[in-house]
Image (cartoon, rainbow, N blue to C red; front, side, top):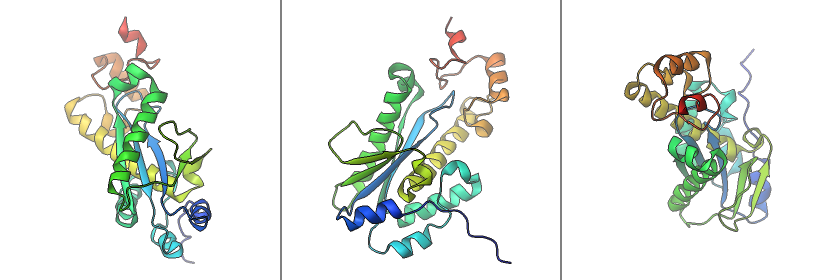
Length: 219
């Protein structure tokens, strides 16, 4: 028996918006919101509306990035960038997270990703946003926010893949800059190994000092 096709996020929301005349639909998602270290990273993806069936076939396997292994995510990120009408990535640093809080910093990363994608869009416009459980507060662009959006919208899923791959690459690079913390393996998330490294070495400049596990080190 042939192997089952990998699970792919649906394109139904985008099809409905395209049919309603919204040709520029942007999906946005983030990665790293709950990590103890490193930036929060967002990505924005606009898929082309012309041939949805062919597009869906090309993006088979694009789904919530947490449901996709790292090797497949890297491959799918290339596929997304190849087939997207436009895309962009934005980040907010650990310093910004500590200064403004994770929610405003996350929104800032999303806005930066949106601006980066819009700058690449042939018409420089966005007619509707699809968001994963956040509200859009930057302008009057119509948006739809939904729970588990990265499993319900192919545009959001594509953005989740790009955001995750970009952030993982950043954290792997931090491994050599801040050796001993294991950033290449846990990517800054709250694992036992990460906690042990903080206990032994203390925090480093990319740790989020306002997060509960790091606050004792502020004293």
